[in-house]
Image 1 (cartoon, one colour):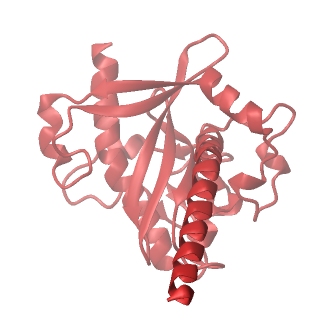
Image 2 (cartoon, helix red, strand yellow; image 1 turned 180 degrees about the horizontal axis):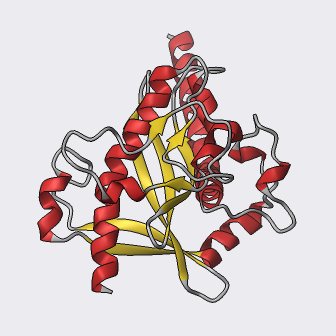
Length: 246
């Protein structure tokens, strides 16, 4: 009986300790998550710490390798980006069927502003499927909706060394200056707007509607393209309608 009482007391003590640790670290965990999300958003917007550029990143570097100071990254996010709600026209409701926006009346967007305070880009959430599970990301388009500014992936469970390489600079760099004009010319039966091709130049050097796949990760690469093609087919219509009414 004494042994049972002792075990109960020990269990209660351990539970109390774990509960305390959890409560103490909860705020820190949430802050770390907020910082990582901010880094991804700023990367997609092509915004880096002062004195640092993407050219200084190695091809295998990921967003976490960018030398942001902890207090700086959230300050820059608040200064350079503005959260806004863009109304979804009734005429586009049919386009939302089967998407995460089905039944929604507005789209959450982050507007990136230049030094003059003018909107220069729009940041949008991305949702899709890879080989092993959900892929989530953040994509940014220019204010004229013609090109992609950048992309980053905030959630993925792809194979390390293969599909998981979508988070590396080498792959994401092909989305810089990606041509989006095809989304405004889509007709029934047309091939996906964004495609995979072997490329001799990046889209920064010569803008096209294609990117390179991750070697050995065909399904993950296709999952990313499917995500972009399906998400932006709707997003750009919503943003275009918003701009026409502004």
